[in-house]
Length: 326
Image 1 (tube, helix red, strand yellow):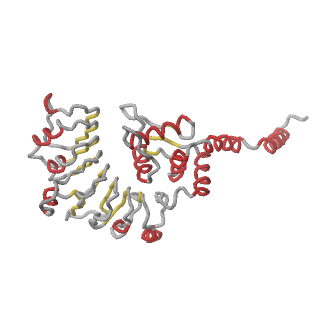
Image 2 (cartoon, one colour):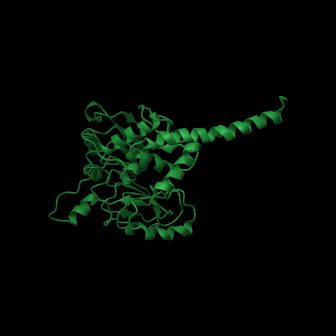
Image 3 (cartoon, one colour):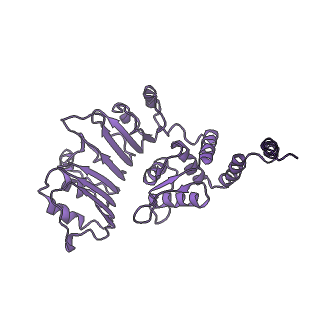
């Protein structure tokens, strides 16, 4: 046989027709790995197909989405977040997900998925209808947003990257567990009793700030409300409910407070925080009270403080289990 390039191409073609291409064989092998997954891991894996190709996936966000979709079930003596991390690690151990960057404490910051496995996710998700219309990150046509009002059972609304006003949409999605969106006007969240994650950002800058009342939402675990929106004063909310118990968010683990004038009042009602970010461009006269509170938060692991005019920690008031301070 003449060892020319054309002849070798013929050999490759003949072998591919018999064995299949490298990508086809790779996908066939990974399909077997997928087929032997337990059902709860299948749903977690297929959900990753909703993220764009070739991107670093934020692990913290992915875990919140899995929990909101109820793919992760509680196990004895383990928080849902811990169970979700174990699910992700199992998918990595099975080579279905790729580990990405790590945090300073050794935990995963990001993960990735191979292009071919991304294709597998999309095809299998379409077959099994896992997405069920809930992965909206990829929607880029704003005119389609009016369709959201049709999804009354939507659990996840992850559209922060879309420049669109969702003020009229969010209150109607009463089954929401995860909401990340832009809004023009402050909205009533009173009906959304299942919300676990709230990330709200003003659609445009306004001098007049608008408060968002979250104090009746006992399931909240992650709260990030950005200017010109702000978290309402819990004392006022309690005064409006005279005779009822004080309002506490005992499940809240991650809290971002930006230029809030109610820092002490809010912190006193969020006793189980694990991650806290404080940003303030003005001096806080009640800084000693803030320090006293932080010294009592046993679970606080991460504390980020930006542009604070006063910040003095000493032995007696340093958070006991803090692992990261910025």
